[in-house]
Image (cartoon, rainbow, N blue to C red; front, side, top):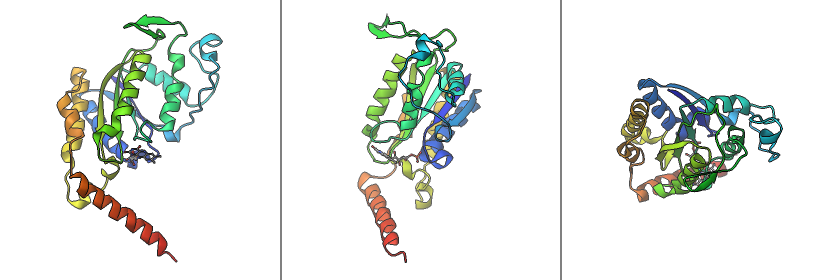
Length: 242
Ligand SMILES: Cc1cc2nc3c(=O)[nH]c(=O)nc-3n(C[C@H](O)[C@H](O)[C@H](O)COP(=O)(O)O)c2cc1C
């Protein structure tokens, strides 16, 4: 099973997105999958120009020469694509959306009706694979992910892919810091590993693992107090600097 993971956090391998993604990919590798991870912020990904040359002049190929050609080849050949993005203003990061817009060379221009909805057919070489969303956000409520999950599900239908589940972690910006407050988060990462293992072995992810990944770690009021105290300290240290 070929897996392409696209991490769009500007915090690269140090962010909460990467921590959750790595655990999930570890599980997939344990289950026999071959994985490759790309950090979109380090890549040259130009915006779609909306010219449709990739449909009518050079079918399947964008005229822009950047890192997207290589990424599209990987995506087209993947059994699983993992979209890893922090929540940015209730959605995915800009660079992730920019890449997704550039995926239209993977479909043909023609309209066809599928499940009573107008769609474009996938080009022949594109594997109709699975898509997993991995996301973290700063706020505490799980509903912060609702718009992003709805968007990724819609993208899957649009691009002829199967949505295989969302690993989402509220107050994910604190994932790298919980241990130093004596709060164990091992079970979150273990659930992410098990989700990856199960997807590689059985082709699906149980709701049980997804629930564990997003489960509450500390009561909201307690978390908000810790976060606000930290923000205040950051502001104070700036004000007291010479
Ligand atoms: C521009 C920007 C917009 C954000 N918007 C939201 C938001 O709407 N809701 C939310 O819960 N967190 C929001 N966050 C917080 C991030 O989701 C959070 O810091 C996350 O942990 C970042 O992931 P990373 O550590 O992998 O970079 C935002 C952060 C940034 C920088």
